[in-house]
Image (cartoon, rainbow, N blue to C red; front, side):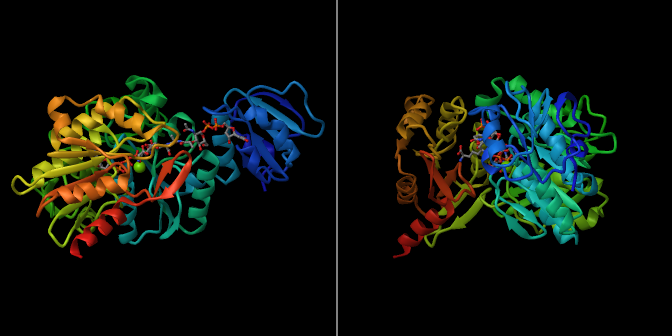
Length: 487
Ligand SMILES: CC(=O)N[C@H]1[C@@H](OP(=O)(O)OP(=O)(O)OC[C@H]2O[C@@H](n3ccc(=O)[nH]c3=O)[C@H](O)[C@@H]2O)O[C@H](CO)[C@@H](O)[C@@H]1O[C@H](C)C(=O)N[C@@H](C)C(=O)N[C@H](CCC(=O)O)C(=O)O
Ligand SMILES: Nc1ncnc2c1ncn2[C@@H]1O[C@H](COP(=O)(O)OP(=O)(O)OP(=O)(O)O)[C@@H](O)[C@H]1O
Ligand SMILES: N[C@H](CCC[C@H](N)C(=O)O)C(=O)O
Ligand SMILES: [Mg+2]
C-alpha cells in the first residue's frame, strides 16, 4: 500500500496541510465514488467544479483532498494538498499508486483525427498472432489478453487508465496499444505514462467545439510527441500536411511513412479493390484484406511500429496480410439481391470524404452510391454542413438522419446539415429523422450491386437520445432490412 507522500512524487506542491504519511486506499476524481481511505482530487471540468464536492467526499470517507484552491474551512484530521493543476497531479498520482505499470510494458500510443482505432486494433491483433500477450485501449473496447473490458471513452481518465494498465501487467501482457484522443492529451489523462512508441495518423477538422481553433487542436496533438522520452520512437505520416510539424520538437527517434515520397516505411499501392489492397511495402509486394487508400496508411503505421518493436519484417507482413480491421470500420456485407452494405464510423468531413471516395474508386461501373448519414448532438456544429455537402457531392442519393442527438433537437441538427446543400445537392437528398426508417429507405432505393453506406456510428450499439441510450446497431438493422428483402 502506498502513502500519500509516495504517490505525490513528482507533483509540484503549492501548500500542504496535514499528515502526508497516510496510507491511501484509492484515488477518486468523482466524489460519488469515494469510500473510506480514498484521496479525493477536485477537478474543474466543463460541467462541474470538483471543489464543490470536497465536503461530500469527506462525508463519504476521504482522508485527503488534493485541490487547486484550499477550502475556506479545513476539517481536522483531513490532509489538504494544494497544487497548481489537479488534472496533471492526478495523472502522476495514479501512475505512482498503481506502481508505474506503463514503465514495465511496451506501450504504444496512437494519435490523429482518424485511424486511431484501426491502427491500435490491427497492432493488437498482429502482436497477439505473433505470440505476445497484449492489451488494447480503444474506442470500441479495451482488451486484456483477449478478455474484453467495455470502454466508456476512447482514452479513459488517468485513474481508470493506470488501473487498467496495472491489470494488463498483472495478466502477463507485455505490449499495450492505446488510442490517445486529443481530449485525453489536453486533460492530462496520459501525462506521466512511459511510452515506448507513438504514432501519428493525420489531422483534419474535428472537435473544434472543444479545442476552439485548429491551431490549438494541432498544438495539443503535438504536445504528445513533445513529451516523449529519448528512448521512445515516434512515427509520423509524411503525406499529412502536419506530419513533420508533429515531430519537430520531439527528442524521440523519428521515423516517417508515406505513399508519395521517400520514407523509412514506404508504400506504393498496386491494386485497390473491394476485395483488398495490393501494396509494395519497402520493395515487397503484399496482399492485404483491409480496403482503401486510408487503410494503406494505417497498415504502414502498424508496420513501422512492429519493426521498431523488434519484430521480424517478413513475419509481420505475412500476418498483416491476413488481418481485417476494427468493427464498424468499412464493415462490409452483401444482401441476397447483391446490394452492398458498408457500415463505417466516418463521423468527420474528412473521414466521410475518404470513405466515399474509396467506395467511388472501388465500384466496378456506375452503380448507385446511397449514403445514410447524420451528425452527433452536443458536438462540433461546424462539421454538420460540411458533412452534408461531402455526402451529396460523392453520392447519388443521400438520406440524412439522426446520429446520437444527445440533448439537442434532432431536427435542428438536420437543419444545420441542410445549410451545406446547394440546389443540386438538395435534389438528391431526403431527410428522415428515424435512423431505422432512413436505412430502410436507402435499401428500398437500391438495386443490384448498388452500394449503401451507413456512416457515423460504426460499432456503436446504442443511440443516445436525450441522455437515454436506446439499443441501436447499424449493422444489425442493415442485416435485418436485407433479410426482409428475401421474404
Ligand atoms: C468534455 C470532456 O472530455 N469531459 C470529460 C471530463 O469531464 P469534465 O472534467 O468536464 O467533468 P465535469 O462533469 O465538469 O466534472 C468535473 C469534476 O467534478 C467531479 N464531480 C462531478 C459531480 C459530482 O457529484 N461529484 C464530482 O466529484 C467529476 O467527476 C469531475 O472530476 O473528464 C471526465 C473524467 O475523465 C470525462 O468522463 C468527461 O468525458 C465526457 C463524458 C465526454 O463525453 N468526453 C468525450 C468528449 C471524450 O473525452 N471523447 C474522447 C474521444 C473523442 C474522439 O476521439 O473522437 C475520449 O477520449 O473518449
Ligand atoms: N488513416 C485514415 N485516414 C483517414 N480516414 C480514416 C483513416 N483510417 C480510418 N479512417 C476513416 O475514419 C473512420 C474512423 O476510423 P477509426 O475509428 O480507426 O479512427 P479513430 O481515430 O479511432 O476515430 P475516433 O477518434 O472517433 O475514435 C473510419 O470509419 C474510416 O472511415
Ligand atoms: N468519440 C467521438 C465519437 C462520435 C461518434 C458519432 N456517432 C457521434 O455521436 O457524434 C465523440 O464522442 O465525439
Ligand atoms: Mg477511436
